[in-house]
Image (cartoon, rainbow, N blue to C red; front, side):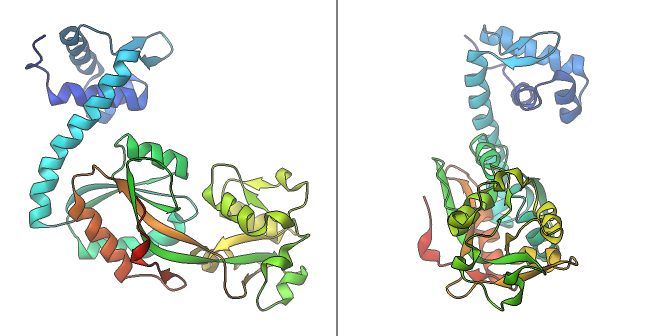
Length: 312
């Protein structure tokens, strides 16, 4: 089998179809016509002697062989991209495209603070942001769809490295009519018997909230789940219960009439935020530069995490 004629363009087309599940959308993403993309993929399948995709009138699916081929194609494309990253890294650590994931309970409150000074410090950086829940971002990291992600630690996926950045304390958001609102500081035990409103499953903040106050939840709290902190704060203002907010979200979400945010008594519960990336990611200089920048420009309300807690 002579594969010397296989091109990087063909591999890029195959990965695009695998990611989008659609030839037309993949062609748009690759800025070519659909016939051009389809012809090149057919050519590649002919060279390999196996079908990569199972085509029907309604959907496109990877064949068993196609799954392995796409996995290898991603790795090849990343290695090629690493050549450019390596050259850029010697000239400038954060230059060119960098795909950064972030969880929804952090992105709206941390990114507005981060992006402007980061762009000023690294004007040639082309930051590509993706917001999603932890499980999706871990899949995207392992599938080479993002380069690094800002996540709550610890993470348990293999082949990933995590660098702690900062510890973010939790606050209690309670209705103004709730006895918790009359306290200057709240103890974790004070939540016993209160309805604690939670995010839906899949959000790491839900699991952290359960660890802090799971014993105090009422049996019917599962009827009060939300997909965002914004929704939770409106539910609190309506008097449906209380919730936990990470510190960076407090300035934005504690201004609603009918609710008030209160800190915990020391030692306050917190979540640890870190930068997570693949151990095989070739542009280590970019990761190190981003980590150092964030550590050196922490927003108010969080504490620097110890460097001794690197996770592998």
